[in-house]
Amino acid sequence: MAKIAAERGKPRGFAVIGAAGAASLLAPEPVTLLPGVGPAMARRLAAAGLTRLGQLAALSPQEAARRFGEEGMALAARARGEDARPVVPERETRSMSAETTFDADLSAVEALERPLWRMCERLSRRLAEKGFSAGGAVLKLKTAGFALRTRHARLPAPTVLPDTLFAAARPLLLREADGTAFRLIGIGAQPLVPLALANRGDLADPEAPRRAARWKAMEALRARFGEAAVVRGLGLRAGP
Image (cartoon, rainbow, N blue to C red; front, side, top):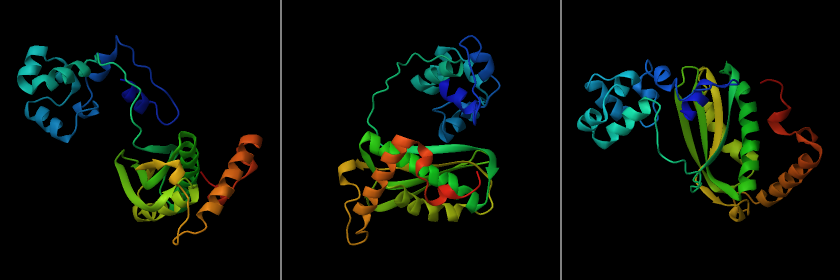
């Protein structure tokens, strides 16, 4: 329910879904709204005449189990807004990302590059804070029609530098920016690599340690004097 509420509140609002009103709010929605209902399960439900969450919620536990197994009981309960599973916040971190939703859809490469650069800087900061670096870069785009696109690029060496992340993500962006309007852009790090292995420099990029030292100095200035103390690269461009 929290995930559904978060999606409804984007980009700047929020949504509150109370326990008493959850079932009625969910009832007219398609079954694909429910986390855990992928294409295969959606086809199984549709074959049984169940395309709306209200129809799924109306099944008794016995009927849901008979038609869809133990998984059916859980799905029918969640369609009513019921979920007894405990929240387990501790899990192994496999990826890390930063993303932003635009106030207005963007389609031009130049308009998309600036927020991508800001997300690269944000991701670099998060990686360093958590003791990780990026072994690969993942570009995330969501179209105005809510279709999600993810594109991957393997990095030649682990990095935590925003310029290296941007250099890997920009060619991916250029291939996707074909006039399509996008409402969200993000950059992810996957796989995650220990921070100690990042930016060591090699024949392909001997300047990496020096750039890493400059970036750390810039971050120290920002921590002391604020984000505007040092602005570089695409952060200087006007636009969104």
